[in-house]
Image 1 (tube, rainbow, N blue to C red):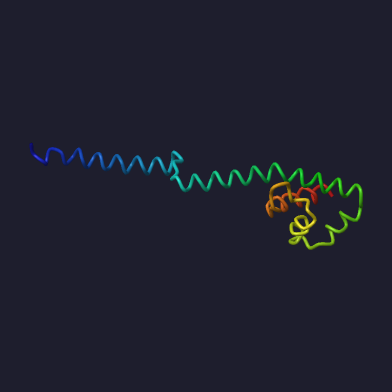
Image 2 (cartoon, rainbow, N blue to C red; image 1 turned 60 degrees about the vertical axis):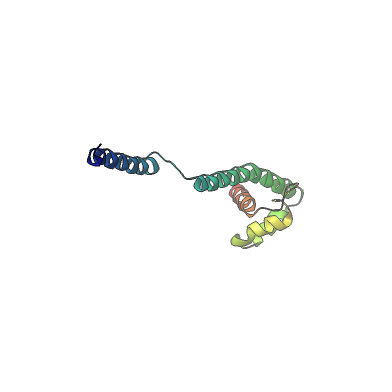
Length: 115
């Protein structure tokens, strides 16, 4: 057998593989394993924030109904420090977890949107 007979097939196979990778990663939304791991972690964090922020806002609203100073105290705090205030007050802390800054930020957005 002559090696020159296989050369076009090998070049075509290599070109097809490269084309398939370009199309797959570029257009078909393929991802590497570590990218998928990061995407899953981000989606997990986002879903946790989406679930816990309304609970935090409800806790804050319940406390504000009992004591009107709660809302006034929050509004006295500078806007970029309100998430820290929410964490320190315990509204963004849930059993078995530490206070989460993302939950506190989302909670502040919910609470200040209602005010």
